[in-house]
Amino acid sequence: MTKAVVITGTKVCRKCGRELSINDFYLNKGTKDGHRNVCKRCYTEYNLFKRAGKVYKVKHRKPLSIDEKREKRNEYMRKYRDANRDKVREISRRSIAKKRAAAEEEKAKKKKRLPNGQGPRHDYHAKQWRERKDELKLRTIERQLGHKIEDRETPAKAAPQPVIKQPRLCLQCRNWPCFDGIEILESDFAREGCHGFRKRENNNGN
Image (cartoon, rainbow, N blue to C red; front, side, top):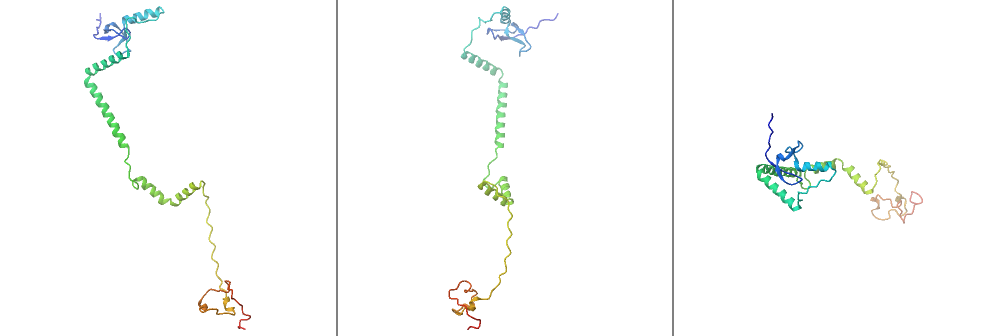
């Protein structure tokens, strides 16, 4: 015959709130400790009421207030920290180290702002301006006008016409020379509208 294994320890029933021996709870593989969270007494009473079609109510359990629940939870956490000091310290160290590493990584990602006129971004835009100066200026003008400027070919300049030098009309004036030094001037006052121009009757001076 196999001997029954007796497990030592206590557990609190969720229904009645009593702290009982672990052997007062049915086995259940789905729980952490392998036993149900309800003691055998409460579990049996629940099944009896359920079969009878009645609503099961625990009369021997006093409901806890919010302050009592908070105090109970704090007491449980104090006992856990006292019993697992090394584990709690290790968890705290890991959490602090993780937060510091995340802060350092975030700080490293932020690039320090360089002064104006320095850095690879400035060099890139300066190079673009040098290579595409005319195109960028045209785009600026189009943006100000609100429409695109159509490409039009620049009309070719007309070739200059040769100047045909005509004989000086002042020489045919009866008042020639009308003032001193007119002989060395190139302007033809008679053709430009001289009011004192009087044309001679013939080239012989008669």
